[in-house]
Structure formats: structure tokens, C-alpha cells
Image (cartoon, rainbow, N blue to C red):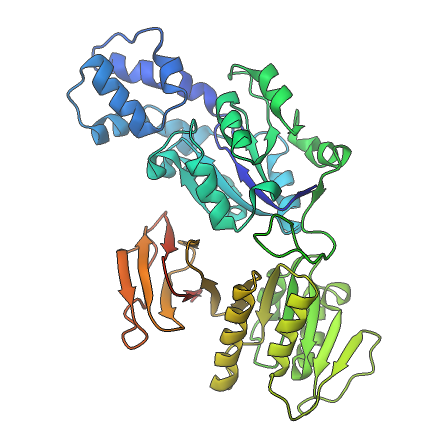
Length: 452
């Protein structure tokens, strides 16, 4: 059993913020001159903010709009999130451990996005999460599994290898019923803690000891040893292969920051010229080749102890495409390509094709050159662009892309068509403080996220 992808509740799990919500509805109604009924807290506990607003309209006859009610309730807790909310003890260290192990993480919460982003940005924890998924934006509370499913789909994890960290029994029951693994986290302000403990696959009393708790339960953190499973199969396949080809790597420190401790390094022919620079940036052990591939027409064949595959000069595959095939055959579930963009345009385009070839076989594929990060978006997926990227572009790479939607960006689309003869989805921008979301129904898109 493995922890490969993780979905964290926000209030009460990551941050000590549940108590502020206990009285938020009562305080707001009293500000309107309305005395709340005793059942208000329990009724709103399972609802999204918009559902709570609808409930107040219906039960109390309040004539304000849903948006006005949501804003009013949020205002009662804004100062707390902006200035006071802090992560629970041990949370930052545990998130760092997960990141180093290659675990992909997201937040799924009933709290509105802008409130969540305040303490995540202030404390620096936002860097650990690839997306924030809210009940308000999904249109469903945590009594339904939509927000958990949205997060899991974006992270690319199966439910069997995705762990939901929850402190609320009703939300935990929803996730568990939908097939997710459950890590219960105690919160004294939440009811049903005994039931949560009984329901959980793992129960975390203290995040400072979370790694030990998982180890005692026989749960391995990260992608671990290679297997023949493929992404999305329900088996957490290999760790990650990193293919290093011969195009320029302008900043070895930036490239090293993308690497993980368990990466399997595949050097392709002239990509060996980057070995010294990467070793200086991240250490000889981390940069050490696991596999060397090439016809060695552009770099001399090394005298190395690593496994080496010598290819003929006359062949169909480029060295990097052959490396991509090797990564898939060896069971890796994810591939990062460095030194594969820029330089000769024909090689760049061939490497984009290699990314598409990998995605068609269930292997997640990414490329980076220091200026931009690239990935393939497949039908039914949701790709994320945090606002740390100033620009992003979408290019259809195999004809027509249909049902293209872009949300949370300066230029939004809904159920649009992009044709290879008219590539108009170029140079978009995530909205400030938002994560842009991209999806499509048919075709394949190349997502280019600009770092400049």
C-alpha cells in the first residue's frame, strides 16, 4: 500500500481554523438583527458556502442575494485568515517530506478559495500544492464526492493510491465511500472523532509523527520501486525517469530544483555534457546516470559503470525517443525531459511527439527548459496553471481540439474548438491569486507555461 497522491482538507486538518467557523453563521445573522436557531451550526456544517447562503435565504427569509450572503459570512472570518491562521504543528515538515518523496498534493475544502490562499501564501505552504479545489466552485458540499474527485483527477492519481486527509467524520465518510484511502486527523472542535478514528485507514494524532504512523501501517510514502503498473491503472507505477538530451540547459541550479531524490536519470548521447553541471548543482549521487543511451555521434562513448545501450547511427528513433520508450517499458509512471527543448527545431518537435507517445501509454510526461514548462493535456483531465506562471499557451498537436474550457484566466473559454490551422489560445494569463484550470473533451493539447 502506498501514498502516491494526497488531498488535504484545510480547516482543522492543515490549519487550526475550525473554531472560527463555529460561530461565523451566528455572528453574521446577529449582525443582520436575526437571532439564529440552535440547529444552524449543524445544518451548515456539511454545506458549501453557496449552499449555506441558500439555506439562510430559505429558513430565515433573508432577502439578500447568495453572493451578498457568502461575502457577509466570509467577512466575519477574513481577519483571522489574513493575520492569525497558522498550520498545525508538524504540518510543514510533513508536507516537505511528501514533496521530497514525489507525492503530488492538492487542497479540497469547503472554505472559499480567497480565504484559503491568504494563510497558504503568508506561511509559504502554498508551494506544496498543485491546486485548490473548493466546494463553492464545484457546486457540491463534502456530503458528495465531487470536490475529492476533481482534486484526484487533476493530480492524476487513482483513488486506490490517493489519500484524503480529513478531520470531519461526514466528509471522511464521503471520501471513504467513494473509494479513497483515508487518513483521519483529530480536531477537538469536530464531533464524531471516535467514529473518524474507527473509519480511518490511518489516524494521525500528531503530524510530527505522521511518517512513523504510515510506516507502522505498512504504507510506503512516494512512488518507491519500479513496477509494471501504469498511471491511472490503480497501481502506483514507477517513480520518475528524467531524460537528459543535448539541448542547452541554461541554469543547472534551476534544473536541479526540479529533481527528486528517487529520480532515475537517463542520459542521451550529448546529454552527457550536462552531467558535470547537474552534479555540481545537486550532487553526484542525484545526477548519476541510471542508464546511458546513444549512437554517440555527438559525444564520445563514456567509460561508465552505468547500464549503456549503444544504438546504430542509422535508425528510426532519435536517441531521446528511444529513451522515452525505455522509460515506458521499464514501468515508469512519469517522465521529465531536460535538455530536450530549444536548439534544433526538428529535435524539439520530435521530443514533443515523444511526450504525446508517452501520454498515450498512460505515462505522465513533462518538459522544461528554464524558460517554460510543457505538458500534454488529454481528454477528461484538468490541467492547472498557478499564478506563479505569468503566461501560458495552449496548442493543439494532433488536429482539432474540442470542448476546450479555460477557467480562472484573463481569457476564458467554454466548450471551444481550437484547430491546428488557427492556434488562438496563446499568451493567456492566470488571474492574480487564482490557479487557471484547463480541460477538453476531444483531442490533445500542448500546455506551455511560461516562467519569464
